[in-house]
Amino acid sequence: MTQPIRKVLIANRGEIALRVIRACRELGIRTVAVHSTVDAEALHTRFADEAVCIGPGPSPSSYLHIPNLIAAAELSGADAVHPGYGFLAERADFAQMCIKCGLAFIGPLPEHMSLMGDKVAARTRMEASGVPVLPGTGVLQSPQEARSAAERIGFPVIVKASAGGGGRGMKIVHDPDVLEQTVATAQAEAQAAFGCGDVYLERYVTSPRHIEVQVVADHHGNVVDLLERECSVQRRHQKILEEAPSYKVPESVRVALRKSAVTAAKAIRYRSVGTVEFLLDGNDFYFMEMNTRIQVEHCVTEMITGVDLVQEQIRIATGEPLGHLDREFEAKGHAIECRINAEDPVTFAPQPGTIEALHFPGGYGVRVDSHVYQGYTVSPHYDSMIGKLITHAATREQALARMRGALDETIVRGIRTNVPLHRWILDQQNIIEGGYDTHFLAQNLDVDAVQALAEEEH
Image (cartoon, rainbow, N blue to C red; front, side, top):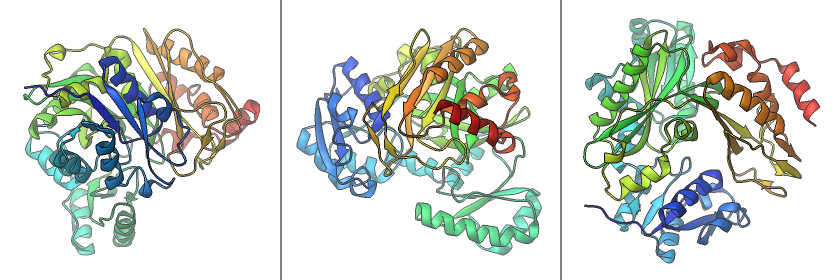
């Protein structure tokens, strides 16, 4: 039985808040924006039907402050909450609090977040379900256990935080003599970043590709995959360029990846939109993690499938079945996304400040998702991403050419951005030929060339 949603409180900010507002508007659903004092003039507060201030600039006092968010929902009369991505989007306690307060949570069940947020528990469940996982361990109990496990797995190994993400608490170990100290360092970093010092070991893949599969699952046991994305261009373990579908992956491997993602979602009786992430090692692939939320890079999937993923989240939250998606998807062309960050294009250091001039590209096959405008001040309190450029074309070659043109048309003055870095990346032969892995940027970055492009831009 479906339960209609009439008003959604968006527990987020920036471009994802605008994205949810647009999806709700098309469905005839009213929206409530929340904002810190710093974001009082942000676009999401202007375009939502209502706006509520939830605290000062620092996230712990506003966007991460659960009581303020729940109070805003009750004050505004919202009957549902959309968490976006980041902030509280994968916090089981937030989802549980929304449900307890009679609010529909537009996302998975809290138990899905808890299970897949615990990387060790997730590995165990996936392995039991027949989804390939890398040789590894459970939570390490002692340095001695780490040494014996590493000898069994074989060096190099990687130390990972059980509650981790974004590269924090992650260490690669080639030398057995430094393993114990590295584990101790990773535990300290994990404790500081996530409030949990649990770490585990996995075999380290030296030249991996990062492939993820988009899944959509309803309350009735139906799971559909909406193809895969290539996310191997990363800086410091964080994605900056994504494309869909993946390139130069044998069709048999592509099919197996998609089937494994569906198996993973069905194994935990998942519901909502989610992403199952894999490491590809040659033609072998291994489960890495599952993100129980909408992804930053969902746009490239939307472009090649024609499916509005945010609207699907909302429909699923009402209890609507996936009958309209019950089909095999085939990619309609190729899509590429460049994350535009307010950061130095060489050092990646954040560059907050006021945007003095701004022009985003347009034209056929070009999409811009952004929350900034001329005169907007990029705050040091939040993530440095100020927008996403997405291009779509019939072929990958055409999508790359269209993205080069879009980047050339992008003008941001007053702050530094990573646009010059993207311009350099798209001219590299490894990228053009599709023969790159997650180490591409770390191993190939030409600092002088990127710096020259940055100076040319300014």
